[in-house]
Image 1 (cartoon, rainbow, N blue to C red):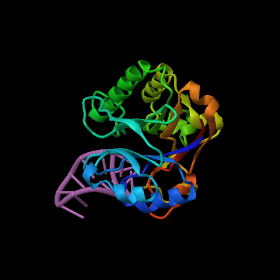
Image 2 (image 1 turned 180 degrees about the horizontal axis):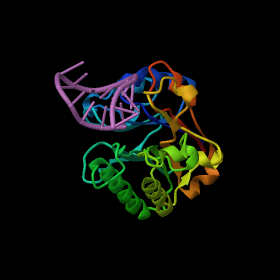
Image 3 (image 1 turned 45 degrees about the horizontal axis):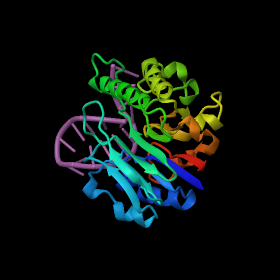
Image 4 (image 1 turned 60 degrees about the vertical axis):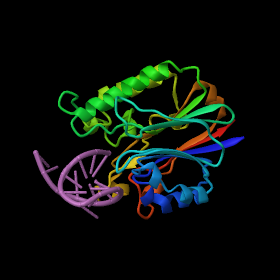
Amino acid sequence: MRIRIATWNVNSVRRRLAGLKRLAKEVSPDIICLQETKVEDAKFPASEISELGYQNQVIYGQKSYHGVAICSRYNLSDSKRRDWSGKIEGRHVYCRLEPNIELHNFYIPAGGNIPDQDVNEKFLHKLNFLEEMSVWFAGRRNARAILVGDLNVAPSANDVWSHRRLLDVVSHTPIEVAALKNIMAKGNWVDAVRHFTPETKKLFSWWSYRAHDWSSSNRGRRLDHIWVTPSLIPALDAAWILRDTRGWLDPSDHVPVLLDLDV
DNA sequence: ATGGTGGAAGGTCCA
């Protein structure tokens, strides 16, 4: 059985319905994990997404900010919402797929502009969130699991357009990179995208709206990730990033990341 | 150091 999973920070699910329709038509994921839905659950466009084929939905949103969802052609069970770092913000949902795979969808806090936890509460919140994740997943390392989402950290030198110029920019600072790698180490996670594309090759999943020409300047970062636990490595068929989506009409600033599994 | 754009708002806040 082949399962195709997409993760996409849509920057408002209601503003991205045409993009979701095009993604469903052209790429046909079985499961789409969304971040930054920016809508409370009662106003989530459930019927529109159901009409695209994704009748099974786990949503956890709030007004204006954050918000995540898992939308699936297949049945989902044991769906849960979890809060982190003392805030109720709609940043994590998870559920079970058949055959017995746990799927986690995260929107990790961006962390504000100043990379100093003593003066920037948002950066402190991000570091606390990452630390809590490392502890929680350390206690679940025997799970057969997939973790996707906008993790808001670009861990490797070739996950950013300029390692040197972003060392002091939130998303690529050494303290965030160490925190993300600590989650991977303690939770026994493997980076599915880097499993297929060597670290020597630049890979981005986000380009700022503020660039005059995002494609030619290409000042991107890889903030969106798909991880799997080791028992799923033999099932990995492919993992890739849909760069062209950034050039679609009315784009998100993030593009989808895809995984094909044969389980 | 600042601004550049986009989204939810209908103030600004956030990315």
